[in-house]
Image 1: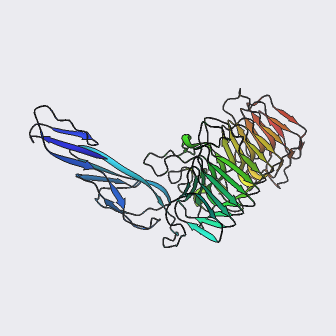
Image 2: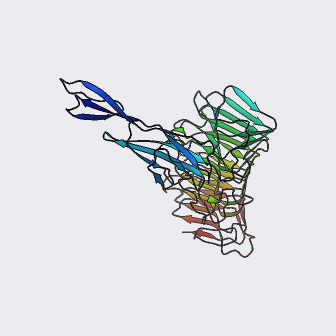
Image 3: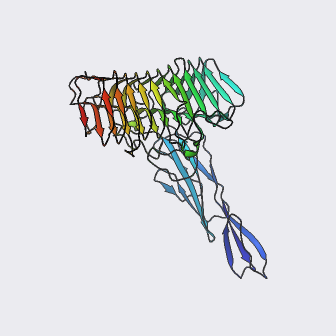
Length: 472
């Protein structure tokens, strides 16, 4: 960005305009033109906590400089150095001024954890755009940059382990295709990575396979997605790498790219911030999505300590506004989270040791069949903002056991320790073979089903042991 200063005969007036547009009064001429620009780049190659990072100023015509490093600190030095004390995403800006005005330039950078090895060797060193039908089928592949699969291109990952650096995403663009068979996708060393991102077209059906239609990912044959902030995001992070004011809550999604499709069968999701997340799309159809016989678990503390509620800058924060929510247990927040989707079907799944197994907002005609839930704050949470809309949630053949609330059996909120919690829903059917057990020793009172402002539902042919049904 630039501001131009025009001196008219050096004694008439000084006219300042933005981006090179300047106006000259009649009967005068331009003697010379000065430019104010704001620009910079990063001289350091190793961006991690505790390392001095050098910023090089490339501005023109500036008399004053104000750097903002996005962590609450600033500098007025022309070419500063800075040390970041925590890892994550930062917006760094440079504001320059002279007599013509003020302009700013900014960029988003990722600061790696302090133990990250900047000298490590990678098979894919930079961002990669897939061209053609590419297969990764042998050994261990280490990836440092984003991998992007454009329209009508495909990437097949089979019988291989792929390890991603902390800032990496595996992106399926509109009309792109990713197939994962008997493969492991994980963060490198002891770090989490950003996860799979599947872009779509918000106003199209999920079944649309036309040119530039929904991006698609197929995960099958015992594949594992582990240690990602979002195991699979059906949509796009908003403002990734762009200059803006971060929106701290979790809803930072680019709604124009919502609508990607997932087919996940016989696969494992483990140690992720969230395992699968569907973002809101204007056409709510989700019938093409298949989630069958998958295992969702968090066997140990998540590798990023920001998921612990007592940790400084715990999530969500400006360091990673897409990461989801921290909790007292430092475990996966949600197995499957969906917003405004219709005809989503989840079958034969196992959900274990997550804060919430399934969490939906304003979903319609969601089917959960023959799934197992254990060691959650809540097994299934249904939340609708419009109680008069027929939500038609269908839950059958599921088993809920050991739903203690907290992992220690502490009930810290009124709705903790509930197998199914439904709020604002209408026309739900909880029926035929659901088993509500609670063999967790020493836990406080827990509940099979709780309702809040819900109506028109049926609860029939279920088995309850050590649980209570409460309607509120």
